[in-house]
Image (cartoon, rainbow, N blue to C red; front, side):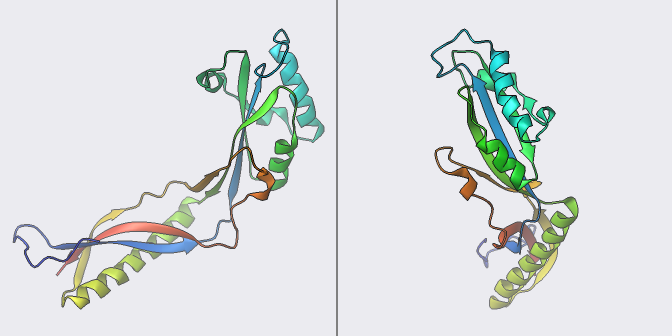
Length: 199
């Protein structure tokens, strides 16, 4: 928060900037998995990549998961700079059960590259939270101004940097991934920076 200065030029409006916050509990989670299928780490390097993919997706479809839900990203694999042939598949779901099923699938040629869980806010929910955070900012600014025998006026600027994905947690692939999740009982902060006219 900017300090209140008694030295204010007449041609520049005096302002006070505060961060207002409110909290929310996530009710919409997205689970993301990136799976690499590659000859890296295999003793044989003459196995067709298509055969390795078929082996992996036979395991996936046996769990009732549609192979079409996996999106291939060959360029992402190339960016990993591995020497042997391979590819990368991206998968996301709103089902915790399906997420854990995908994590359980292991083959000699498959490897988890990235696992993340995100809390998503709808535009309507984001709007409600922003309004609440602005009101919180107003109360903060009013209290500080009154301590200095001042008052606040109109809002001059609102800075809301909250994306549609509010929280995204990436997990260490060396740990037991199924023990991690966003805590549904925890109230996550939703901050908004607001600048008020200082009278």
